Length: 396
Image 1 (spheres, rainbow, N blue to C red):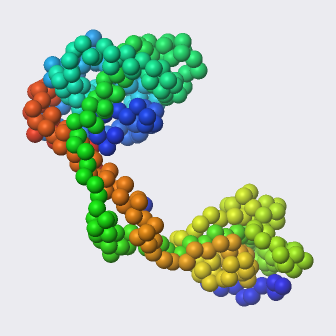
Image 2 (image 1 turned 180 degrees about the vertical axis):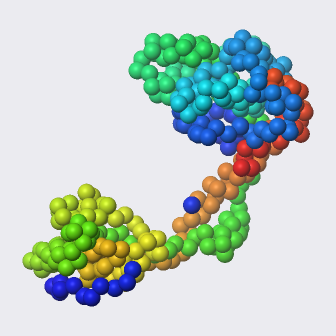
Image 3 (image 1 turned 90 degrees about the vertical axis):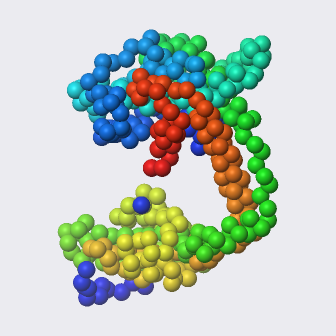
């Protein structure tokens, strides 16, 4: 039973621009947040064209904005995405800044197309021209079954006709979407074909990875507890500490009597009472708290109790930060280390993925080195400079 209150106490595709058609694509509305930052880390010292971004006239859809290995990129190829981003963020961008932001977004989108265009150009150089119509024909069904539903969801359209109208409003069309889908899909598949097959990860490599990361503490698991609480805030009783104590004690005694009458009761027992009377932030969920790591709570008294009580045991009344608590541990995981046998499959996938990305990167490095790229924003871009611009976001 709960006694009268004691004396009060003092008080943080990895391949750029190559589209995987099976991958979920986030809505452009989530790309820009205030304040707007220049994409790719543009600074006034980088190029004369970058310096003049703020004063440049808006680019119209038919204007050539890039030439990539003989392929032309029109502003209309990327304007629809830029328009969507601006539309979603129009209230965050001052009117005087909109042309500048629009041009910066255009530059970002154009840079994002470069690897796809390089791969697509390489594909067209090496695959017999008579085979390309068959490849494009084979992509009609995937476009209808995956890309159109994705576009409808992204643009929040209910029907195909609404999608067509919305794309037209944004400055593009469904046939244009089909062309871009084809290029992205072909580029992605071509990249997979160009990249050498990864070597098999050996058992010794798995063990070496595990040992290295064990030393770094990666596989150490802190103690965790799943628990429930009843809580009363003193200010809900006009600052009357004794009245608040009586309220929490009454709740605790009700639970105690219920459990005493049914000793085989298992699982959460605070649920109904917490929903009715508790002041805790999980009261609506019956006072339940999911897995909590030892040391994670600001309330150090509860933290200590959670990892000292027996599972199923109810605590005494705990006073902290002008409130009274009763807690009960539902489940607990003791601190330990994940054994190698339980993690070797995940390690294998991680090492295989890393090897694949390195092989893919090597293909892109080769293509970029021999490429001829010009954009309206940066002029001619040499191999080293192109690599610097495309790789920079990955270093952030």
